[in-house]
Length: 158
Image 1 (cartoon, rainbow, N blue to C red):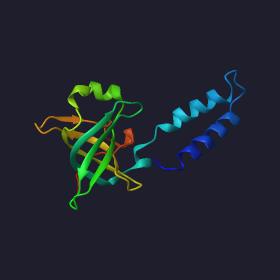
Image 2: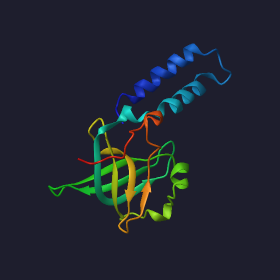
Image 3: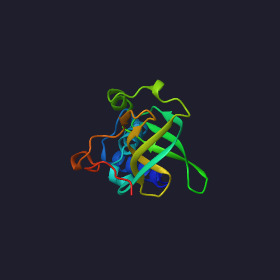
């Protein structure tokens, strides 16, 4: 996430508060509403469709949270350095409906993750799918296509 996000949230909250009539809930409720609304982003705002990634690594943790779950894997580069990558997934309810279960993801499991890298160049990506050592594949993202705000095709790592 970029360091300007808190500034964007505060500015948007102030604009909405100024535009809305007085509320018995006060500015705090308006700020919370704006932060929740703006915390969810479009795919194109954070990830680059032209930077597909396919990485293999050991699962360090899975964060089951909303509005997005997060998969963290340690990836060993060609130089031998280990980098912890963070992969954004869809919402927990969507993952569950797609067949994901907490017990399927113990730390240390080797995963292959396909996705698209963050625009800011950090080891962060939007996950499209994960593949287990036995070949089982789970889809992690939202439906593809321009209407969904996501790429229209699966990532093909370069």
